[in-house]
Length: 363
Image 1 (cartoon, helix red, strand yellow):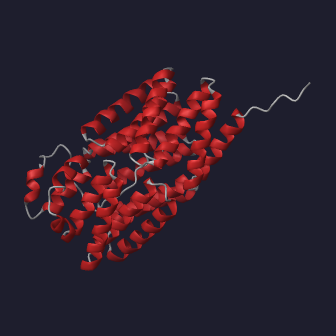
Image 2 (image 1 turned 180 degrees about the vertical axis):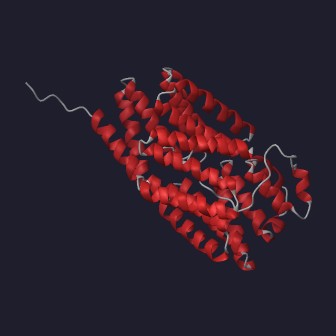
Image 3 (image 1 turned 30 degrees about the vertical axis):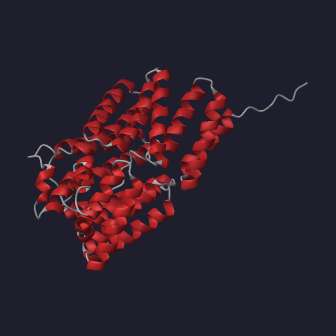
């Protein structure tokens, strides 16, 4: 399962301008409408630009504007600076609660859930997302209800409760529709495709993924398009279409590099490794997967690290390097078990059992 490609939704309900619309620059953020402008930058995946601007703002201004603090925290986390991201998200939560701003409070809990999930703390993520959804439901913030339901679906998929995951995504899509938030609907379609793929329903997965890609193109959402292409590329690998998988994951990499999204770029490298392996270029695939593991460790993304270790183990096993493959598979299994990712852990236990050699007792 591709845990990192599966999109955790961290932002709020506003519909954003398409990426091809007149571009907002950092200088525009000096106006009183700064939170809305910054929100547009975050929603279109321009996290590095947000960080470059907001790091120069006064601490007092950020602390006294909970939405700005929250957007700063989200952007920091998305460029691999988790500790700083968590600090500013907690600052936003405290400030929103002091001021009684329930919508920002709900989004802050949702963002904290995303941070916990990426760090592998599934119980904390679940707690934050359920709390955020309750607050959002009470305040009529249907887009945040959608985001929390989307994220709960990811958790259910991770532990192998696929029917519950599909139900959560259905709730998310309905909430997004009520909020008139097509970007969220496309994200949940993307995640639903991954849930189908993890159940082996590859044709249904491909149809849902293609819907996500088409929606991202219609919305002119570069960040969503990059993720959707990466997700569909991995499904293409499973379907045996390595050439198209390579083309799509390379397009996703270009888009993520343009956005300076180093975290999703690391996930793209994992999928690129799969596509290269399926194309018969084992040496290149191994190098790329090792790079993905290194980056996952650097950005504190243990779920991505476990997935890349699993994929590298499968590659090395196919090349008869069983000792290395076994060590990686055991490490990946232990990580998945720590996260409660039971479905992935079971698959890895089977791989490990198949690789372990029973000593010859004859003679």
